[in-house]
Structures are given as structure tokens and as C-alpha cells.
Length: 132
Image (tube, rainbow, N blue to C red; front, side):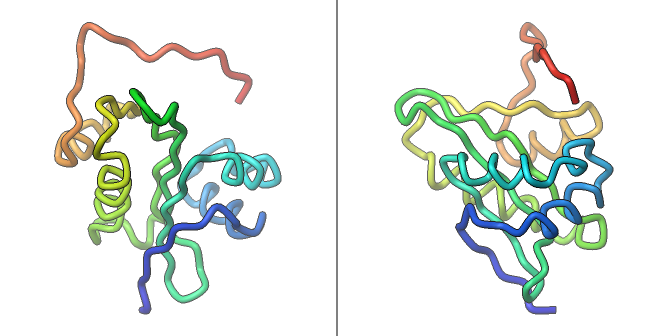
């Protein structure tokens, strides 16, 4: 295994489709849209096993007050190896001067994000308008 981290927003549709479907995310059915979403992201931190994309996190930001982390996913074959935490740590370092970092977590991942320094606010709720 040759694991490496990279900062790029250019991915093949096949690599994105394989990664997103590996975690059963509906957006994996739209790899061309994912490719455009990555290109439109402010930053994308990715992790690779050789030339295989095995994880990524992307961000959107106003550059002053708030950064939003939209996607964080690691292929199931590579989970539990600290790669997700490495992706988050890289992003937190890049946005160290931004006072508010936001993400939406599914309930079973809240503990992971807490271990990365995020806090769960019970007086706030994520809201969606989604067709996925």
C-alpha cells in the first residue's frame, strides 16, 4: 500500500463514482455532477492508494467567517486507519484563521467529528431542500 495525501480538485468521473458508491451515497449516481462539484470547491484534500482515490474532503468558504465541509468519505476498505482524521486535520489547518467551521454529520458519526474537535449543538438543526 502506497498511501498519500494530495490537494487537487481534478478527479475522473470513474474515481468519484467508485468512491461515493463504495459508501452507498446517492450522489455517486451522478459522477459528472460530483466532478463539477469538486472543481467548484474551494479546496479538496484527497487520499490515494497509488493511483486509486480512497477518500476526500471538500470545502466551501466565504474566506472570512465560515467554512463549510460538504463531503468527507473514506472507502470502507480503508476505514479505521486514521485517513479520515488526516483529511479533517489537513482542512482544519488550512482554515485555522476562519472562526467557524461547519459540517453536517449523520448521528453515528458524531463521535468521530467530536474527536476531530467539532462540537454538537443541540440548539441547532441542519435543514435541507434536496432532490437526492
